[in-house]
Length: 446
Image 1 (tube, rainbow, N blue to C red):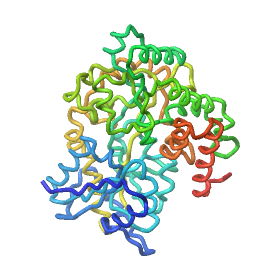
Image 2: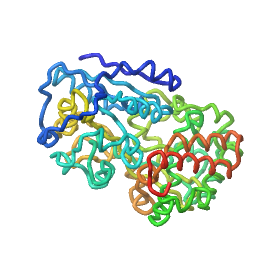
Image 3: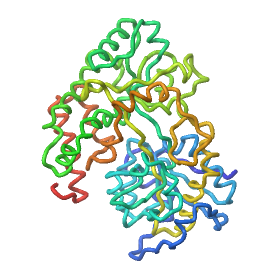
Image 4: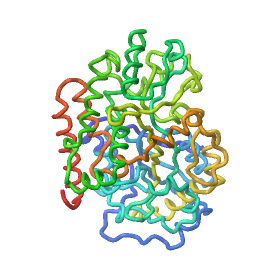
């Protein structure tokens, strides 16, 4: 098996650029672009004919370590003789680092990113292969297909888990404390207080890392209202003018001030999530169900994955809480690079049922592809399937809000949590960042 290079880029943006710029070598800085072969994206069973090609791939450092990603990477190298040179960019710096590299022409052969409006910053029409006519498109589940598109064009393969997000809770701790699963926001606060009274930290939130604040869960039910979403996306309203978003900020503030996030929440990081949850130090965490099976190490801690259930995320914006549906990362191909044909063939390799069923064998997830037959549904989802149908929402904020960024918005909430700003100032900062992003993308109305 060939050795792959996986770099975690955590240093400052300037140092990151200086350190990593030489890793790609696949970007094409000329003004001319290569046309994608008309039949390349349509052959879902093609294998690489470019022996010993090295393809560069940029992605979120956490995402590329997913077990099903590692399996398909290994399988590709073994089957084709080619090599993947993988650069993992730290979550907190991902957007800034990746955008800077794209703007300087340092574009990899392959790029992992979520779809929706966030993809616009990378100019998909100019930079990524159009896979709309690929044979594998018909194999994508309907609930996932919309996430692959921008302006009706399919730019990437959703090789990912179809997770359900909410609040994971420790069933054994709840039983020992005589706690019932909450069904309302007030009941959730009561559960937090009972746990705290029993010397158990109610919720673990990696506030220092920002992105695990996961405020998009709170936004999804609000912007399920299409009219309100359209008003926000045309700059006719702002976060600050929407009462539910004030409620969301009040929720975060209350969780911190009441001790429901623990004493050291400001320095808590994602690296310790498994340990804190696994040892029972904390009883709940906002996360996706498949995390328990792809990231959490059941064998290392007192509590196994099956000791946890899933309940709605109560984050202040809806009385009965919410679940978030699948949000799938895409594998995209640089259509202007030196290795465009090999990049297309790699994605077609991933899309082959014989290969993705190896990659996802034993993974607990709902299907992304219609031909998946080696996966298992998580018991957490099976328990809440009916409730999900009642109160669940699609991944709306991440996919549909123009200017939404998971990290930048969370930075403002982080400042609120540590007491540096007020609720009003928090919403003002979130609006300013969202509008700045939309303006930089020259969105009409901004």
